[in-house]
Length: 122
Image 1 (cartoon, rainbow, N blue to C red):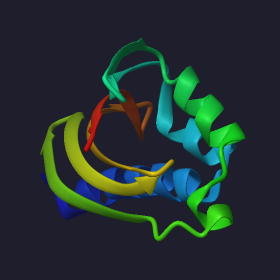
Image 2 (cartoon, rainbow, N blue to C red):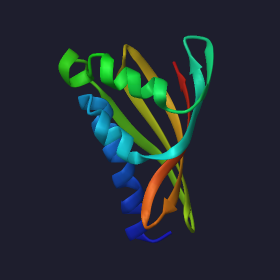
Image 3 (cartoon, helix red, strand yellow):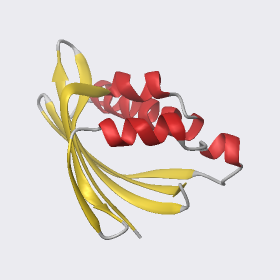
Image 4 (cartoon, rainbow, N blue to C red):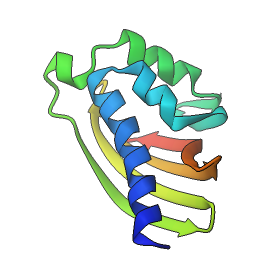
């Protein structure tokens, strides 16, 4: 893993976090591959599919910036193997919950894109 690649992966995740924090759907969408998958448990309900329900939340729910929630995010793990990366991020509160997110990214046409996100809230 080179520092340049690590910085590029962090930049993708930071754009995702900035978009989530501010409610900027276009910024969030830039970070995902068009065929990305998103899976996890939300309030005990299993969700498996694409990121569209998350996009709806970003668009329609008050963002932490607008609601005044003290949103924080911490990248706790980053691994890169060639054109594949894995990142773990703890964030919250978002919509009143704290999340652990496991992102998998691929380098596609020179850009790092999220291809899957698995999450759980606590």
